[in-house]
Length: 197
Image 1: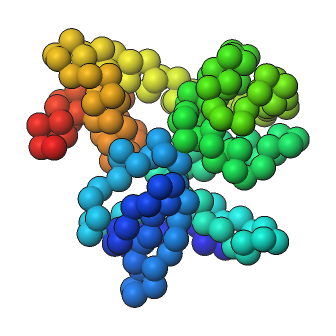
Image 2: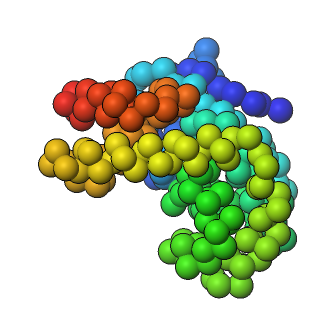
């Protein structure tokens, strides 16, 4: 099973990318939320992979920028009636930390913004996964980082950047430095990213 792919980004498509590894091009489906953190075509990428097999398409590669998103993707797939495509769609709207917080806080309404997710499906996800997401180590760090992210986002907005640009910068910085937990450092790196665009 393919677990991680490192290579040259050949193409970005609607919901997938192509990565060249020693002359072999791998088609990898990636959540839309991750696209703002990807480099330009021609640069090297390092993608976490979840390999899934289905009868219609054979082996399908789902890609994630960090381990947490991949782990939450696999957790979502454990919920009854939630297949690969639905789990993938959820991660196109929310990152791992956001999804975990929605589940723990039983925030059904948040799930309803995702196409194809109705109230019953949202309630089933929360019911089946609430106990499974509790006590996992990465969740504690996600919550801490989320709070720091909010502070950094507000600071960027107060400097005149839009919420969209602020989030794009934060996602880029955190994809490169997932363990960063200092708001001033996050802000500094985010400003560097925004000024280079």
